[in-house]
Image (cartoon, rainbow, N blue to C red; front, side, top):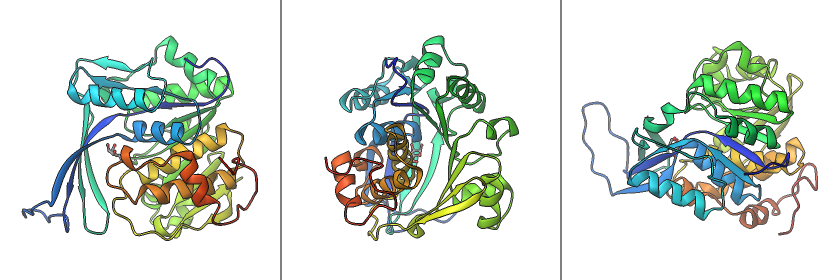
Length: 314
Ligand code: RIB
Protein backbone atom coordinates (compact mmCIF):
# COMPACT_ATOMS: atom_id res chain seq x y z
CA UNK A 1 0.00 0.00 0.00
CA UNK A 2 1.04 3.59 -0.60
CA UNK A 3 1.65 5.58 2.61
CA UNK A 4 3.20 8.70 1.09
CA UNK A 5 0.82 11.57 0.22
CA UNK A 6 1.18 10.75 -3.46
CA UNK A 7 -0.59 8.95 -6.28
CA UNK A 8 -4.22 8.31 -7.01
CA UNK A 9 -6.77 6.32 -4.99
CA UNK A 10 -9.72 5.05 -7.02
CA UNK A 11 -12.84 4.10 -5.09
CA UNK A 12 -15.10 2.52 -7.66
CA UNK A 13 -16.61 -0.31 -9.64
CA UNK A 14 -15.15 -3.22 -11.56
CA UNK A 15 -17.28 -4.99 -14.17
CA UNK A 16 -16.94 -7.61 -16.84
CA UNK A 17 -18.21 -5.96 -20.03
CA UNK A 18 -20.19 -8.10 -22.50
CA UNK A 19 -19.91 -6.14 -25.71
CA UNK A 20 -22.10 -6.68 -28.79
CA UNK A 21 -21.04 -4.89 -32.00
CA UNK A 22 -24.02 -4.03 -34.20
CA UNK A 23 -24.73 -1.77 -37.16
CA UNK A 24 -27.42 -0.04 -35.11
CA UNK A 25 -28.90 -0.61 -31.66
CA UNK A 26 -32.31 -2.34 -31.65
CA UNK A 27 -35.54 -0.43 -31.10
CA UNK A 28 -37.99 -1.72 -28.44
CA UNK A 29 -39.47 -5.04 -29.61
CA UNK A 30 -36.82 -5.50 -32.32
CA UNK A 31 -34.09 -8.16 -32.67
CA UNK A 32 -30.85 -7.37 -34.47
CA UNK A 33 -27.83 -9.58 -35.20
CA UNK A 34 -24.43 -8.65 -33.78
CA UNK A 35 -21.27 -8.92 -35.85
CA UNK A 36 -19.32 -9.94 -32.72
CA UNK A 37 -19.86 -10.56 -29.01
CA UNK A 38 -16.82 -10.22 -26.74
CA UNK A 39 -15.87 -10.00 -23.08
CA UNK A 40 -13.66 -7.11 -21.94
CA UNK A 41 -12.60 -5.94 -18.48
CA UNK A 42 -14.37 -2.72 -17.54
CA UNK A 43 -16.33 -0.85 -14.92
CA UNK A 44 -15.90 2.88 -14.52
CA UNK A 45 -13.68 2.48 -11.47
CA UNK A 46 -11.37 -0.11 -12.98
CA UNK A 47 -11.18 1.76 -16.31
CA UNK A 48 -10.16 4.91 -14.45
CA UNK A 49 -7.60 3.03 -12.37
CA UNK A 50 -6.05 1.59 -15.52
CA UNK A 51 -5.99 5.05 -17.14
CA UNK A 52 -4.36 6.52 -14.04
CA UNK A 53 -1.61 3.91 -13.78
CA UNK A 54 -0.95 3.86 -17.54
CA UNK A 55 -0.65 7.66 -17.34
CA UNK A 56 2.17 7.25 -14.85
CA UNK A 57 0.57 7.58 -11.39
CA UNK A 58 0.94 5.17 -8.50
CA UNK A 59 -2.64 3.92 -8.23
CA UNK A 60 -4.52 2.03 -5.53
CA UNK A 61 -7.93 0.52 -6.24
CA UNK A 62 -10.69 0.21 -3.64
CA UNK A 63 -13.61 -1.92 -4.82
CA UNK A 64 -15.08 -5.42 -4.90
CA UNK A 65 -15.27 -8.46 -7.15
CA UNK A 66 -17.00 -11.81 -6.73
CA UNK A 67 -15.41 -15.20 -6.17
CA UNK A 68 -15.99 -16.16 -9.81
CA UNK A 69 -14.13 -16.37 -13.09
CA UNK A 70 -14.98 -12.79 -14.09
CA UNK A 71 -13.54 -11.62 -10.78
CA UNK A 72 -10.35 -13.58 -11.44
CA UNK A 73 -10.00 -11.90 -14.83
CA UNK A 74 -10.45 -8.42 -13.35
CA UNK A 75 -8.01 -9.15 -10.52
CA UNK A 76 -5.55 -10.24 -13.21
CA UNK A 77 -5.88 -6.87 -14.95
CA UNK A 78 -5.16 -5.05 -11.70
CA UNK A 79 -2.02 -7.11 -11.15
CA UNK A 80 -0.85 -6.98 -14.77
CA UNK A 81 -1.16 -3.20 -14.94
CA UNK A 82 0.70 -2.61 -11.67
CA UNK A 83 -2.28 -1.18 -9.80
CA UNK A 84 -2.14 -1.70 -6.01
CA UNK A 85 -4.88 -4.30 -5.54
CA UNK A 86 -4.06 -5.19 -1.94
CA UNK A 87 -7.38 -3.69 -0.80
CA UNK A 88 -9.53 -5.42 -3.43
CA UNK A 89 -12.49 -7.12 -1.74
CA UNK A 90 -13.62 -10.61 -2.80
CA UNK A 91 -17.24 -11.12 -1.84
CA UNK A 92 -19.99 -13.73 -2.19
CA UNK A 93 -22.02 -11.63 -4.66
CA UNK A 94 -21.22 -12.09 -8.36
CA UNK A 95 -18.76 -9.77 -10.08
CA UNK A 96 -20.47 -6.75 -11.67
CA UNK A 97 -21.45 -7.11 -15.32
CA UNK A 98 -22.17 -4.55 -18.03
CA UNK A 99 -24.20 -5.35 -21.13
CA UNK A 100 -22.91 -3.02 -23.85
CA UNK A 101 -24.17 -2.44 -27.39
CA UNK A 102 -21.73 -0.60 -29.68
CA UNK A 103 -23.21 0.67 -32.95
CA UNK A 104 -21.60 1.37 -36.31
CA UNK A 105 -20.71 4.92 -35.24
CA UNK A 106 -18.87 3.71 -32.14
CA UNK A 107 -21.65 4.97 -29.86
CA UNK A 108 -22.73 2.74 -26.98
CA UNK A 109 -25.64 1.95 -24.71
CA UNK A 110 -24.89 0.27 -21.38
CA UNK A 111 -26.82 -1.63 -18.71
CA UNK A 112 -24.96 -2.49 -15.50
CA UNK A 113 -25.77 -5.26 -13.02
CA UNK A 114 -23.87 -4.02 -9.97
CA UNK A 115 -23.37 -7.33 -8.16
CA UNK A 116 -20.28 -7.15 -5.92
CA UNK A 117 -19.95 -3.38 -6.42
CA UNK A 118 -23.12 -2.87 -4.40
CA UNK A 119 -21.58 -4.51 -1.34
CA UNK A 120 -19.07 -1.70 -0.77
CA UNK A 121 -21.19 0.12 1.81
CA UNK A 122 -18.59 1.12 4.36
CA UNK A 123 -14.84 1.73 4.18
CA UNK A 124 -12.36 -0.28 6.24
CA UNK A 125 -9.63 1.44 8.29
CA UNK A 126 -7.09 0.30 5.67
CA UNK A 127 -9.17 1.76 2.83
CA UNK A 128 -9.57 5.05 4.69
CA UNK A 129 -5.80 5.15 5.28
CA UNK A 130 -5.07 4.56 1.59
CA UNK A 131 -7.36 7.45 0.62
CA UNK A 132 -5.79 9.76 3.19
CA UNK A 133 -2.29 8.84 1.96
CA UNK A 134 -3.03 9.63 -1.70
CA UNK A 135 -2.67 12.94 -3.47
CA UNK A 136 -5.94 12.47 -5.38
CA UNK A 137 -9.13 10.51 -4.70
CA UNK A 138 -11.11 9.73 -7.86
CA UNK A 139 -14.64 8.28 -7.70
CA UNK A 140 -17.67 7.61 -9.88
CA UNK A 141 -21.28 6.72 -9.04
CA UNK A 142 -21.34 2.93 -9.53
CA UNK A 143 -20.80 2.29 -5.81
CA UNK A 144 -23.42 3.12 -3.14
CA UNK A 145 -23.61 6.91 -2.65
CA UNK A 146 -22.96 6.68 1.09
CA UNK A 147 -19.55 5.14 0.34
CA UNK A 148 -18.80 7.97 -2.08
CA UNK A 149 -19.65 10.52 0.63
CA UNK A 150 -17.61 8.68 3.25
CA UNK A 151 -14.55 8.51 0.98
CA UNK A 152 -14.88 12.20 0.11
CA UNK A 153 -15.05 13.10 3.81
CA UNK A 154 -11.93 11.06 4.57
CA UNK A 155 -10.06 12.68 1.67
CA UNK A 156 -11.15 16.22 2.49
CA UNK A 157 -10.08 15.81 6.13
CA UNK A 158 -6.66 14.52 5.02
CA UNK A 159 -6.00 17.20 2.38
CA UNK A 160 -6.38 14.70 -0.48
CA UNK A 161 -7.81 16.29 -3.64
CA UNK A 162 -11.37 15.01 -4.21
CA UNK A 163 -12.47 14.26 -7.80
CA UNK A 164 -15.90 12.94 -8.67
CA UNK A 165 -16.90 11.71 -12.11
CA UNK A 166 -20.65 11.85 -11.54
CA UNK A 167 -21.50 8.93 -13.83
CA UNK A 168 -23.98 7.36 -14.15
CA UNK A 169 -25.77 10.57 -13.22
CA UNK A 170 -28.04 10.79 -10.21
CA UNK A 171 -29.12 13.68 -8.03
CA UNK A 172 -26.39 14.37 -5.51
CA UNK A 173 -26.79 15.27 -1.84
CA UNK A 174 -25.86 18.88 -1.06
CA UNK A 175 -23.28 17.76 1.51
CA UNK A 176 -21.24 16.11 -1.25
CA UNK A 177 -20.81 19.21 -3.45
CA UNK A 178 -18.85 21.13 -0.83
CA UNK A 179 -16.34 18.27 -0.58
CA UNK A 180 -15.56 18.15 -4.31
CA UNK A 181 -12.43 19.83 -5.64
CA UNK A 182 -13.01 18.63 -9.23
CA UNK A 183 -16.37 17.53 -10.66
CA UNK A 184 -16.20 15.85 -14.09
CA UNK A 185 -19.44 15.29 -16.03
CA UNK A 186 -20.61 15.10 -19.61
CA UNK A 187 -23.28 17.48 -20.86
CA UNK A 188 -26.18 15.07 -20.17
CA UNK A 189 -24.95 14.44 -16.64
CA UNK A 190 -24.51 18.18 -16.06
CA UNK A 191 -28.12 18.85 -17.10
CA UNK A 192 -29.53 15.97 -15.09
CA UNK A 193 -27.64 16.78 -11.89
CA UNK A 194 -28.29 20.52 -12.09
CA UNK A 195 -31.93 19.98 -13.13
CA UNK A 196 -31.72 22.30 -16.15
CA UNK A 197 -31.92 21.41 -19.86
CA UNK A 198 -29.60 24.23 -20.91
CA UNK A 199 -26.05 22.88 -20.62
CA UNK A 200 -24.48 26.30 -20.07
CA UNK A 201 -26.94 27.20 -17.33
CA UNK A 202 -26.50 23.76 -15.77
CA UNK A 203 -22.71 24.01 -15.95
CA UNK A 204 -22.66 27.42 -14.27
CA UNK A 205 -24.96 26.13 -11.54
CA UNK A 206 -22.61 23.21 -10.84
CA UNK A 207 -19.50 25.39 -11.12
CA UNK A 208 -20.91 27.56 -8.35
CA UNK A 209 -21.03 24.71 -5.82
CA UNK A 210 -17.78 22.76 -6.44
CA UNK A 211 -14.12 23.78 -6.59
CA UNK A 212 -13.54 23.23 -10.30
CA UNK A 213 -15.73 21.70 -12.99
CA UNK A 214 -15.04 19.95 -16.29
CA UNK A 215 -17.93 19.37 -18.67
CA UNK A 216 -16.93 16.97 -21.44
CA UNK A 217 -18.67 17.68 -24.74
CA UNK A 218 -17.71 14.70 -26.96
CA UNK A 219 -16.32 15.83 -30.31
CA UNK A 220 -16.67 19.46 -29.13
CA UNK A 221 -13.99 18.93 -26.46
CA UNK A 222 -14.56 20.11 -22.92
CA UNK A 223 -15.36 23.25 -20.95
CA UNK A 224 -13.34 24.06 -17.83
CA UNK A 225 -14.74 26.12 -14.97
CA UNK A 226 -12.97 27.61 -11.98
CA UNK A 227 -14.32 29.96 -9.34
CA UNK A 228 -17.81 29.65 -10.80
CA UNK A 229 -16.82 30.82 -14.31
CA UNK A 230 -15.60 29.22 -17.52
CA UNK A 231 -11.83 29.56 -17.87
CA UNK A 232 -11.03 27.43 -20.95
CA UNK A 233 -12.57 25.46 -23.80
CA UNK A 234 -10.31 22.52 -24.72
CA UNK A 235 -10.83 21.32 -28.29
CA UNK A 236 -11.01 17.61 -29.04
CA UNK A 237 -8.67 15.78 -31.43
CA UNK A 238 -10.30 14.79 -34.71
CA UNK A 239 -10.55 10.97 -34.73
CA UNK A 240 -12.85 8.33 -36.19
CA UNK A 241 -14.30 6.43 -33.22
CA UNK A 242 -14.50 2.64 -33.22
CA UNK A 243 -15.90 2.40 -29.67
CA UNK A 244 -16.45 5.30 -27.28
CA UNK A 245 -16.89 2.96 -24.26
CA UNK A 246 -14.49 4.05 -21.52
CA UNK A 247 -13.43 7.29 -23.23
CA UNK A 248 -14.80 9.36 -20.35
CA UNK A 249 -13.10 7.03 -17.88
CA UNK A 250 -9.80 7.36 -19.71
CA UNK A 251 -10.17 11.14 -19.54
CA UNK A 252 -10.82 11.04 -15.78
CA UNK A 253 -7.99 8.62 -14.94
CA UNK A 254 -5.45 10.47 -17.07
CA UNK A 255 -6.59 13.81 -15.61
CA UNK A 256 -6.26 12.50 -12.05
CA UNK A 257 -2.76 11.20 -12.77
CA UNK A 258 -1.69 14.55 -14.21
CA UNK A 259 -3.07 16.48 -11.22
CA UNK A 260 -1.43 14.03 -8.78
CA UNK A 261 1.83 14.69 -10.57
CA UNK A 262 1.46 18.42 -9.91
CA UNK A 263 -0.01 19.39 -13.27
CA UNK A 264 -1.93 22.60 -13.87
CA UNK A 265 -5.69 22.41 -14.39
CA UNK A 266 -5.81 23.30 -18.09
CA UNK A 267 -2.73 21.35 -19.17
CA UNK A 268 -3.92 18.28 -17.24
CA UNK A 269 -7.22 18.50 -19.12
CA UNK A 270 -5.34 18.72 -22.43
CA UNK A 271 -3.31 15.62 -21.53
CA UNK A 272 -6.55 13.82 -20.62
CA UNK A 273 -8.14 14.93 -23.90
CA UNK A 274 -5.31 13.28 -25.83
CA UNK A 275 -5.68 10.06 -23.80
CA UNK A 276 -9.44 9.96 -24.45
CA UNK A 277 -8.91 10.54 -28.19
CA UNK A 278 -6.64 7.50 -28.35
CA UNK A 279 -9.07 5.36 -26.34
CA UNK A 280 -11.95 5.60 -28.83
CA UNK A 281 -9.89 3.99 -31.57
CA UNK A 282 -9.93 0.46 -30.06
CA UNK A 283 -12.84 -1.83 -29.08
CA UNK A 284 -13.33 -2.49 -25.35
CA UNK A 285 -12.81 -0.31 -22.28
CA UNK A 286 -9.61 -1.48 -20.56
CA UNK A 287 -7.94 -2.64 -23.81
CA UNK A 288 -8.35 0.84 -25.31
CA UNK A 289 -6.64 2.83 -22.52
CA UNK A 290 -3.35 4.28 -23.85
CA UNK A 291 0.04 4.26 -22.17
CA UNK A 292 1.55 7.56 -21.00
CA UNK A 293 4.08 7.61 -23.87
CA UNK A 294 1.30 7.30 -26.47
CA UNK A 295 -0.72 10.07 -24.85
CA UNK A 296 2.30 12.39 -24.65
CA UNK A 297 3.07 11.71 -28.30
CA UNK A 298 -0.42 12.78 -29.37
CA UNK A 299 -0.51 15.71 -26.92
CA UNK A 300 2.79 16.96 -28.36
CA UNK A 301 1.20 17.39 -31.78
CA UNK A 302 -0.32 20.62 -30.54
CA UNK A 303 0.95 23.21 -28.06
CA UNK A 304 -0.16 23.06 -24.43
CA UNK A 305 -2.02 26.09 -23.16
CA UNK A 306 0.20 26.00 -20.10
CA UNK A 307 3.51 24.28 -20.83
CA UNK A 308 5.19 21.83 -18.49
CA UNK A 309 2.25 20.52 -16.51
CA UNK A 310 2.92 16.98 -17.58
CA UNK A 311 6.53 16.24 -18.43
CA UNK A 312 6.51 16.21 -22.17
CA UNK A 313 9.03 13.73 -23.46
CA UNK A 314 8.91 10.20 -22.14
O1 RIB B 1 -17.82 3.92 -18.69
C1 RIB B 1 -17.80 2.65 -19.31
C2 RIB B 1 -18.08 1.59 -18.31
O2 RIB B 1 -19.39 1.75 -17.81
C3 RIB B 1 -18.04 0.18 -18.85
O3 RIB B 1 -16.76 -0.40 -18.80
C4 RIB B 1 -19.10 -0.54 -18.03
O4 RIB B 1 -18.60 -1.55 -17.22
C5 RIB B 1 -19.80 0.54 -17.21
O5 RIB B 1 -19.37 0.58 -15.91
